[in-house]
Image 1 (cartoon, rainbow, N blue to C red):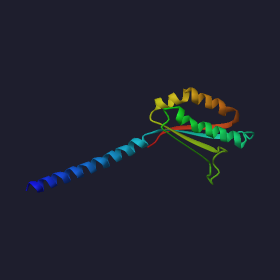
Image 2 (image 1 turned 180 degrees about the vertical axis):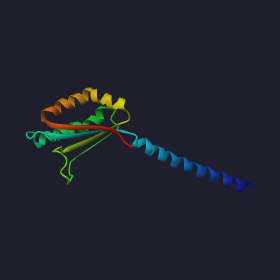
Image 3 (image 1 turned 30 degrees about the vertical axis):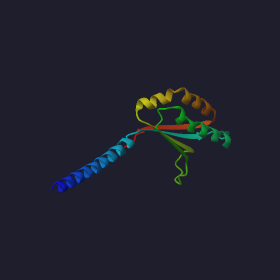
Length: 133
């Protein structure tokens, strides 16, 4: 009888642990999607050659290692067949935990230096921030 009770108790602990892990995974998924996304779309001037554009992309990609508020970063170039991009060619997605982190990023000296580096080559920019749901 003691063995049976110990086995039942052990099974109950295992099941309880699995359920807690499932709950944490679900909670973690919710936390991960509860992120502030900062979407930046660039259109470069015609005189911005490929080397200059590559340097800008590289400089933008270095920001996450220099600005701790950045949680995630990714980028890519437009390849939509719809032709609705209004000549915006590059998309950057920067993720923050909070609006305070985003606001700190915007005034961060490294970000400001990047913007000054970017400006001479930039024909247009669109920025949209949203809370991921």
